[in-house]
Image 1 (cartoon, rainbow over the protein chains, first blue to last red):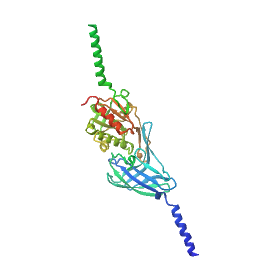
Image 2: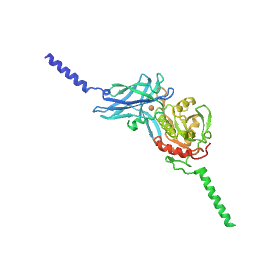
Image 3: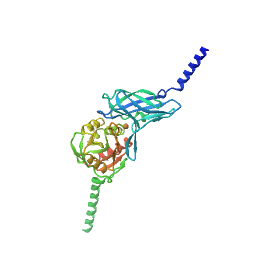
Length: 154
Length: 202
Ligand SMILES: [Cu+2]
C-alpha cells in the first residue's frame, strides 16, 4: 500500500516535470554578440533563438549585471525613415527560430556598469513568457563589425 | 566666306557642347538612383568633430557620402556605417578621395567630441558633423530628408527617427546618387569608382 502510494507520487512527479519543463529549457541560444560603441553609448545585442518545443515561446526581455537597463527593441525602415520601437514580446515559433539581428529585433543595452571592450564576454539573462530565464554568453565585438555570419550561414 | 563662317560656328558649338558636357552634366552609368541635376549642391554651415566651423565648400575635391543619424542609435546607424566602412576598404587607397559625412540629427547630445569618438570607431574616412539645430534642419530639408525626436521615456532617454538614405556627391559638390541602407556594397563601390574619376581633382 505504502509502496504503491510512493510509486504514484513518483510517477506524478516525473510526468509533472516533463509537462512543466519551462520555456527557458526549450530555447537554444547561439551566435550571441554585442556591438560595442564608444563611451557610454547604448549598444545593440543580437542572438539566434531556437525553440525545440511544440508551442510558441516568447522572449519578453532581458537583464544583465553588466548593464543598468536592457530593452527589447525593433528597428524598422518604412517610407525611407528608420525608427526604433519597444517590443513587449518576440514570439519564437514552435520548432522554429527567432533571429535578433542588425536592423531588426535587438536588445538595447544601456548604461554599462563597467566599460565593455571588444573581446569581452557579457552574460545576459533572457526572460521568457512563463517567467523563466536563461543566462547566455554574448561576445563583445567592435563597432564596425559587419555580421556576415547570419547571411553567409557559417 | 559665308560657308567658312558657318563651319567655324558649327565647330565652336560642338567643342563648346563637349567641354560643357564634361564639366557640368556628364551622365554617368550609375547603378544607384541617379539624382544628377535633381538635388541641390552640397551646402551647409556646421561644426566638424574637431570643433571647427565647416561648410560644404570645405569638402570640394572629395567625393562625399552624406548620412544622417545620431550616436545614441545602437542598431541601424552603426550597421550603415559598418557597411560604408567595408565599402571604403574595398576602394583601397582611392578611399582617400572620399569622405563619409555623418550628420547628427540629435545635436543636443551629440557634441563634436562624442561625434569624433563615434565616427572613428567605424572608419578613418568618416567625419562627424553637428551644430545648430536650425542649420541641421536646413541641411536635412535641402535633401528632402527628415527627422523626428520621439517622446522621452521616464529616465529622459529618447530616440530620433530619421531618414535612412545615403547621398553621394561628386568632387565638385554636385548631388549624384542616392543609396538606401540596403544598397549592395558592389553598387556603392561601382558608383564611387565612377565619381572618384569625375570632376575636379584637388
Ligand atoms: Cu534600440
